[in-house]
Amino acid sequence: MNANSTPRPGQLLARGVCRHLAGYDFVTVEELVPTAGLRVDVMALGPRGEIWIVECKSGKADFQSDQKWEGYLEWCDRYFWAVDDTFPTELLPSSTGLIFADSYGAEIARMAPESKLAAPRRKVMIQKFARHAAIRWHAARDPGLTFAWEI
Image (cartoon, rainbow, N blue to C red; front, top):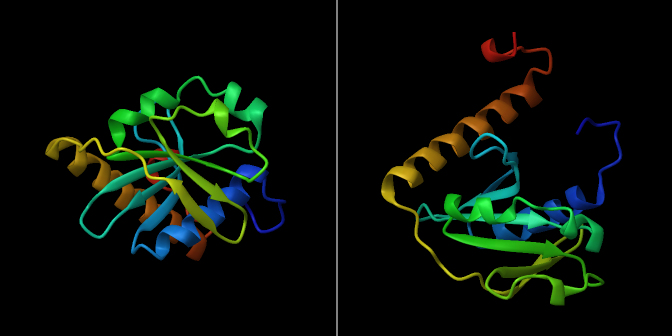
């Protein structure tokens, strides 16, 4: 998202989620690709290396069009949905976490069950997280930069 564009509703939810998770000492990145064909809205890395994925849904149609969410489960320790307070939460699987959010903050309404990643997968995800964060930071500081794989 560039400075001149209007954030989409899901991006506003993501901002509130990221702000909230910072209070738990989690760092976050948005739109990370854990593997080809998947892109998570928010990936959070906790102080002990725990990895949470949060998918932000702006409405019923947005949720119903998401056919890939179960593929995210194998890439995190906990999986959450983030929605606003008007979202019909009965649509969301009760076996996942639930966060109510807006563009300024969020609250965890239901903690996601924990399913610990295997050590090799955790290492891969932490490396992807670090590279994604570094690339985003570098791009923000030097918008004209082209990375080798983009050429």
